[in-house]
View 1: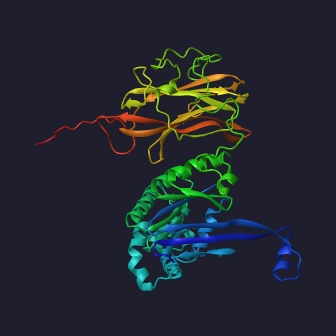
View 2: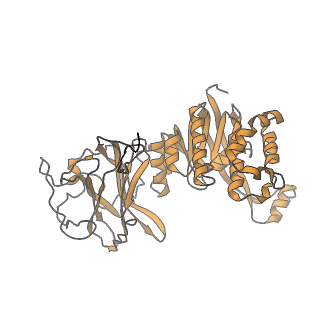
View 3: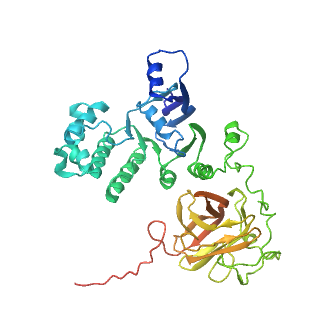
Length: 468
């Protein structure tokens, strides 16, 4: 094993036999027939990746992608059908919290039971007992049978046992959001302590904010196959496209397409999809609708070139993450400050408006206009959409052009942010992306006063002397 790797997953496959009848399983197990009585289902198919020592790696993917299966193989709960996993270091796994607990035993007895199963001696468990009890914080209930515990008390104790054995490798599967909000904060603090100590962490979560915040690298799984790996931002963007079927999976797997050029062939075909091919704002057929209501948009300044398109006033991201099914096209967009200027620099504390102009290529029911801000690490900071704002657009017709205007006060801290806009909707209960532009404009917030965190609550602060 290479000294720089804590985990090596080498060409791992996991196959399950699916039987149509229980009798088929029985006959196959006893070897009573030479006929194949089962169907093969591969939960994992020739998966390979490495985790370096001291690295935090995230695993993301849709349900059924194989995330939990590969974690169970890494921790020894399951055996692979093919391939191997090589581990260098002691593992603590937060998979199914409380697995192995005896419901008739007290909390203390289960601590010893689980510690022994992990491989600790009684003396080593005694040494860690105070840390476990303090972290669980369930008081005298630790001396009662765990069958009398509430679900919250049960997971607190299980988490405390798993997290306080000082592992070299921590495996986490959706286990940080357990218990009440205060216990969750304690869990995340412990997780951050592990990172600071240089522990190796393999982290599975559907919370993309946590993936972006904590992970050094992310592996994206799809239907039991490793689709791609890279920076958290790139993999999260690809995952979001995968969720709405806007990824040419075979092209990525075959190496004929990169992760930034994976819009499926049918996408964005109606009406054109490049900035140059979009109709200019104010062109024929543009009725200048405002705030998704047909009406007068109002005046806006032209650029020196004479263009009336808002987007021409901005430096557009050349690597904008763009995709959609072509039912609509965002043909123009921009940001207007409190002085009516088109600008990407907004002074903190002032009001500003985000505008997006959308042309529809087919009849749609209740399309949704959206915007969001992310920081440079890819963490979603804030955003909204017309559905959240209770603006039902109703039915739009082919050829209609609508403008959405979102006006608000800029309360983000001073710094650099990335603006994303989109037009989406629901069809037969399924979420559909008509056109999306991720990270299209870099927005600079100018501030002479910052506070802690991402935004300013505009505190009205007073300090007075009350005594000598």
